[in-house]
Length: 98
Image 1 (cartoon, rainbow, N blue to C red):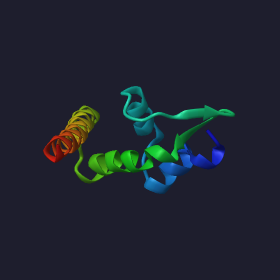
Image 2: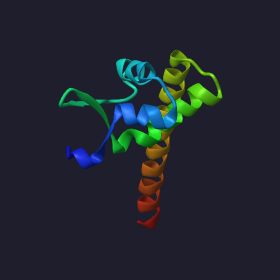
Image 3: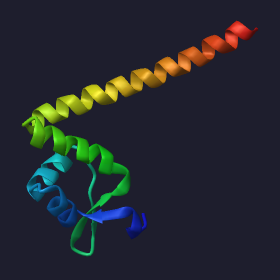
């Protein structure tokens, strides 16, 4: 992964006014992946949106880590079901044309 696609974790934490320990606990829980390069942790650009959502849940709604884990699981499950639904609708359309 190119370093242009990464944001330094400390810069991200400063910008969002969040402790690095919170980001580290999200990584420990498997909710986010950090990349370690040259003695520093970086956040991939692909995970910024998800990470910012988790920070808003924590800061604005005061939801703790187990709550964020549960919400992330439910949202992932919902997204999987939506994809499955789209796939089934496409198959149904295919059979309706025959």
